[in-house]
Image (cartoon, rainbow, N blue to C red):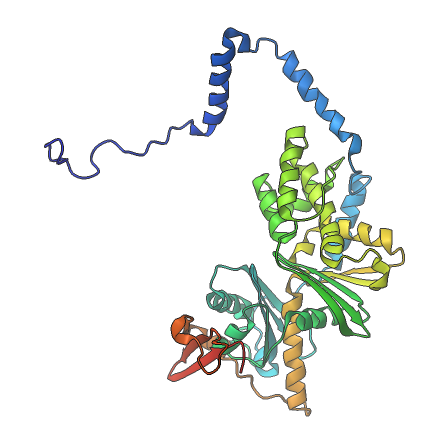
Length: 437
């Protein structure tokens, strides 16, 4: 370089950033070196029986252990088999389905915070196909790719299926409705209620546990009486369970199998995920195995739902007919924990697992679109939806602007607005999302 006068090219000298291959063990190496510095040869471990005796003492922490989720593995296998048989499969055809071009379909989209869901229904409300995708930070692009996947099995000679009605829900519902066009954008409580009542008409309590939030909807005569919502803390629900399982080396679809194999379970304190994380560290230090800790997390989830979020000590006051939905309830160890918790407090409770729990909100949005279409045309021949169409998704372009230039100055509130500019072929439109009129 200039200092040496050798004229070396920048970057041709030694790499200033060194990453030794054994850097992972430097903490342990440092502890050993400190021990040798302080105690000399006295720090050398020559009798490993002392270490073995210490490890054998791990069994003492099982005194306060909880019993397993099932008394025997055969009962766990029966439980899994029963719920898998009860689950419904969409009526996705093996080949194209031209009948959807003439009969038409209803589309529901749930743009959630951690995932995007979509569903196709026929005129009777039967699920034709579902699609699910972890959010990638751009809800418009998420929906674009999701709808292409959703409609692929139903493409006939004339293209994709004919949309009779399109409904949106979730935090991104207004944005998606402006970009892709639709008939209705409904709040999540309405969508999830409609999605539950479609399968359990006498439902009284809906428990929807997603990746990030928990929704408890209390019904009376089929209408929403009250609801509880938790979005401030993951509280040990879907995304937290998934990340913990992956940390232990388990894919999320193997969570229940691992939890069911635990013969004893540690007792977690319910509450914020920060406290659960502290408990996990403590349990690992005490020698609890990963599958035992995962079973403990499944058991603590109902406590987080009913004690931390709902805060109702008498569950019987809420109702007797419970519906479990949301993506987290695909984890059958959570379902078992929920059933045990509820029936211990409401012995005559009837607990239903939603057959399409992870897309219940999208189903509700599609049903609301169907209801609106029927109301607009009671004769039963609804017009086409303002939806852009499955064959036009690639031609939709949009920009989103939200800065000081979009702030409203028409009153003293000075609301921050969002401008959405949409181009669909030669058509151009501007949509404004604002907090007030």
